[in-house]
Amino acid sequence: MPGPLDGFRILEVSELISAPLGVMMLAEQGAEVIKVEPPRHGDEARQLANYRAGMAGLYLTSNHEKRSIGIDLKKPEGKALFDELLATADVIVSNWRPGTAERLGLGEDDVRKINPDIVYAAVVGYGDDGPYADRRGYDPIFQALTGYVAAQLNPEIPIPDLVRHAIVDKATAYTLAQGITAALLARERGAPGQSVRVTMLDAGIAFFWPDGMLRHCMVGDDVANPMVPGERYTLTPTKDGQIVFWASTAEQMQGTLRAVGRDDLANSPRHQGRALIEPANMEERVGAVAEGLSRMATRDAYAVLVEQQVPVAPILSRAEVLEDPQIVHNGTIVEATHPIYGRYRRVRPAARFSQTHFELTKPAPLYSEDADAILEELGHDAEARRELRQKGVIPD
Image (cartoon, rainbow, N blue to C red; front, top):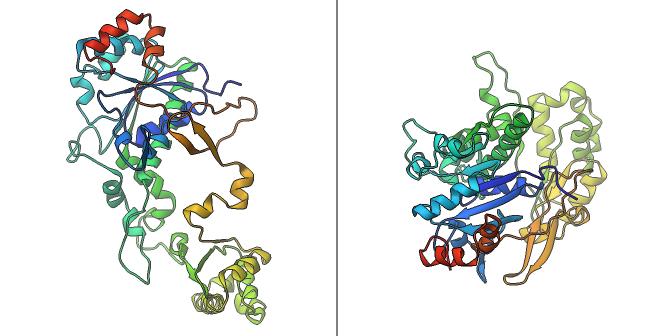
């Protein structure tokens, strides 16, 4: 069955994670995506991370459901081919540095001369102008600038640390996908094609803000700060490891005490109602629970906290994530086999639609593997394609 975005064509000229992942989300919802990659090696992600038989893991995870064609946009014939594709597209997506699109003749004004109603979507690092605009920006740099690193502070080891995955890249991807969908919806309702510009710096702050900047959302010296949820992102030691729990209601807080055999405290007036969050009572409860869990094996602590209906989880390794009973039950991770690069895993989209269910079928493409099919659709016969290859416009 066609997905909810069936019938929309997206032309993508982006690399690495931020824009490709956002476009992949739209492809997984049924949009047709033609990924135009630079000559020789294609998307830079093809050269990074684990690699087998022409496919790199980083490229694999952000490019399912797309078709790939390599075009040298610096050659006049390559630019002409791209213009042909532009005329057929609903959306163009790039993540070039400021000024690159204009140098290639693909700035918004240039594109609208070919396709006036197109949604012109672009990801930039710091912004189109300003003191940092010309700098190269990558996820760890934006983590440092937007508060993530400062928030990764273990009180036992008071040294900030990076979030060890590309969280700002992925926040940008989700922002981009939502922005493109909104622009397409507006166009369907009669608005003209418009630009969607996502700045990674801004997307990173926006994603961090709701809880990460709680202490800074109200301005003034008269704001009380009895507790900030982000400060409870801690690991609690057990006899043989660590565990994570989150007790946010009175019943759950009392449940943590019962889990470690401290019914006396759970039934005490000091741990009932509003008294629960009095600093001295909080300190008593937290200390009692920590001491009790430190004497329990992780398996036992997990079981008893589940029994007490306290939100809790063990610390799963990456390999254990693949085997978690709920994740397996949900069918979140699927495995398939590609005829060239072999077995691979992918994650099913988190948003699942009841009436426009799209069957995921196309794995991430090898470099320019769809060139002939795409060019044939544009009317370029075998001889024309041979000439383009001889001129180096498309790869052999």
